Image 1 (cartoon, rainbow, N blue to C red):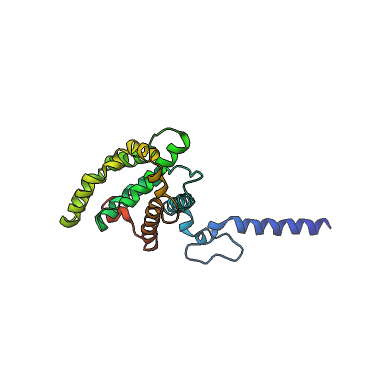
Image 2 (image 1 turned 135 degrees about the vertical axis):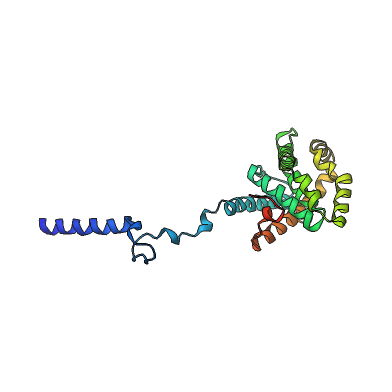
Length: 221
């Protein structure tokens, strides 16, 4: 009985050693069945960019649900990495399609929601967005990348429409004070819901095509 037990332990130890010693197989040789093959773990499972995109997709989905339901409930603030990504997505969008106010409206809604819940207007989301925009010198890059036609449209938008996103606190205060304007933002066809849906559509196209928007606008990332 003791001999059998010793033999069993030896075989068990040898088997365990084969499982744990993954690097023992010479390069180029296939790994034996039962061994752990780290290479089989898909790289995308550990890709930080794709992980960040998944988190951003979740935030978009929650924001649209919030807007469709009439602006009730609460959605966690957008992370700094999400804001950074959206600053690049916004640059990509305006250089490809002209004015993209729906991205700014999506960010504005986050600040409007925060102000309604907390009773004070901080506009931390759009504030971080514009700080990132300037710190990364995206304003200058936008002027460089825009064609003459698109540049004219963007210049007009920046003059007439962009100030309400730059002066976020004033805009949010005005929306809160105007029930009719607030009501028009929500529901399945509300202006905010439409804006978020357009942002999700653009984001989805970028992901489906596996576009590197940072490279597309000349940024190393």
